Length: 161
Image (cartoon, rainbow, N blue to C red):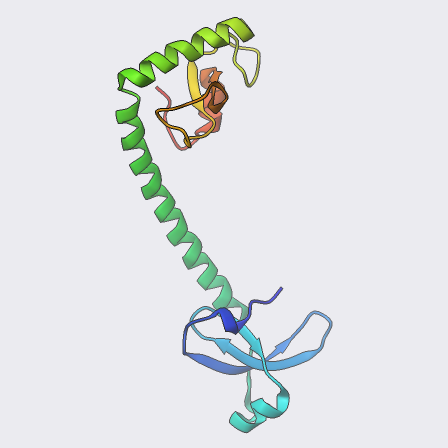
């Protein structure tokens, strides 16, 4: 599926010819920064460029842009994780969390005999947040009592203490 230039805010583009998988050739503009494409009628392209001299649509521009965006999102995600770890590490030291944790372990003992709520094969040692929406006001179904292996599986980017 092609991405269209109408969504692109960049101003640097080239007139190109693009061959689709069915063999049909289309003419249009390709952004030289992000690779987005806009199909334009052949007659319009002919007003601005020689149809025999058009460059071929370059998939690599779009792929490189997507890689760059992906890397930027990954970097932002890593920063968010660092920030969340700081906030959570402070939260996990509060009396509120310590009390909630005792309550959640007691509930797990009552309902699951102290067994991990994920794998059901090991002793539950950790309380895992399923959502952070109600931090400081967690409901029992916002968390699960889990074993260390399951908790590490849920948080491969974090070391579980």
